[in-house]
Length: 392
Length: 150
Image (cartoon, rainbow over all chains, first blue to last red; front, side, top):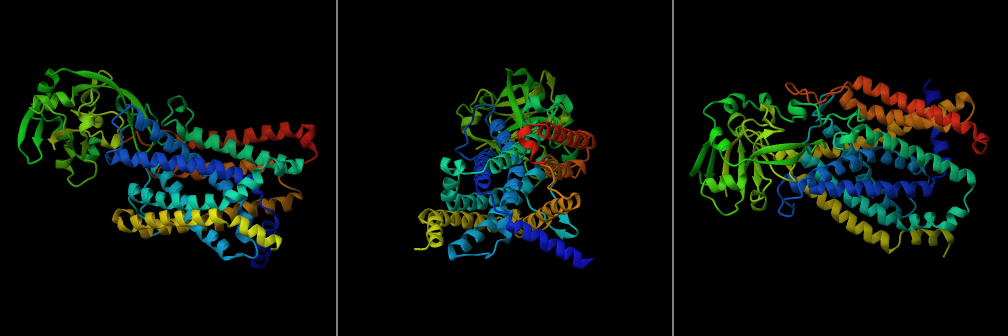
C-alpha cells in the first residue's frame, strides 16, 4: 500500500515538474492579484487611519468609510481564488530541478516565503474576521491573536514582499505579454489559457457575489455566505455588541440616566437628562453605519448636534472630545468603551448624539438612550450607550 | 556570454535588486512592528503563516493535483475542463463556507450575526457551480472548434 502511494506521489511530482509553467497565464493572474492586494492594502490603511483617529483621515464625506471598507472586504475576498489560481499556475516551480540556479534566484525564492505565508495569513484572518470567528486554539495549541494588530502588521510584511516580487517579475512579465510573444503561440495554448482565466474569473465573481451583499445593498439576497444581512436586526439593521453582552441594560434604562459633559480633569460642566436633550434642537441625517467586518447599512439618525451640546455646556469653540460609554462602568477595561471625536468632526453638522433611528427611539442594542453618529467613521467608533462627553 | 547567463542577468538586473532592497526593508519594518506589538502575538501569527504554506503546498496542492492525476488515469483521458473547474471552485467555496456553515462565530444574545441558513447556502452554491459547469460542458462539446479537444 505504502509502495503504491509512494509510486503515485512520485509520478504526480514528475508530471507536475514536466508540465511547463504558462508564464503568460502567471503574469496575467499576477497583475490582477497585485491590483487586488494593493487595493486591499490601501483600503486597509484607510481602515486603520479611521479606526485609530489618525489626523489625516478626513471628517467626510459621510459614506467614505463605508466605501473604503466595502472595497477592502471585496478586494480581499476575491483575492482568495486569484491567489489559489496563481499558486496553482506556478506550482511546477515548487518541484523544479535544480531548485536554485544562482544567488539571485535564491534571494527571489526566499522572498516568496513572507509573500506566500503572509498572503495566506492575511486572507485567512480576513475571511475569519468577516465571519466573526477568532480562532484561539487548534487541537490544544494556542493560535490566538488580536485581529487588528496581527492583520495590520502582517499586511506591511506582505506589501514589502509583494513589491520585491513585482520588481523580480517585471522583465519576465513584459517579455511574455509582448504582442509578438502571443502571436507565436499555438491556438491550443491560447484556448487553454483563456478557458483557465475565464474559469478563474467566474469563480472570483461567484465568491465576490456570495459575500459582497453585506456591503453592496442590491446583492444582499445573493450573498448567501455573508455573515450579515444588512436588514437583519432590531430596527432593520445588525448589531455588533448587544447590551446584554456588555451588561449596560440597567444603567441605560435607569430613570436617573444623565449625560454629563466634563473637562479632562473631571470638572463637570453640565449634566443633561434625556428630557433635557430631547428639548434641544433636533437634527436628522442619513449616516451609514459601517463596520470593520465589512457590513454596512444606511440609516436615518436624529438627535442633538455635538456642537450644540458643547455650546449648551459653555464650550463655544470646536474642541476634540472623548465620548465615553456606560460600558466603562459595566465592563471596565473592555475595548471600544471610549472613542475620540476630532475637533474637525465635533463641529460638523452631521455629528450627532443620536436618540432616534428611522423615526423611532434607539433600540437598546443600538445604543439607547444615546449613541454617537458621525460621518466617515467605523461602527466601532460610533460609541453606544453614552454616559459622558469629555472635552480635551 | 552564454544564452543562459544572458537570460539570468536580464532577469536579475538592477530592477530586481532595487525591488529586493526596498521590499525587504518594508518586510523588516513590518516584522519589527509585529514583534513589538504584544497583541499581535507574533509567534502565533508567524506560525499560522507557516501552517498556511504547508496547508497549501502539502495538502491543497497535493490533493488537487493528485486527485486530478488519479481520475485522469482511471478514466483514461484528461478530465474535461468543466469538471476540473467545478471541482476547484467547489473546494474554494466549501473552504470559505466552513466558518459560517459551522457557525464558529455564533454569539449568545446576538442573532444578527450569522442570520442565514448556511446549509441551504452551500447547497444552492454547489448547485449553481455544477449546473453552470455542466451547461458549459454541454455547449462547448457541441462547438466544432473545441470538439477535437475532448
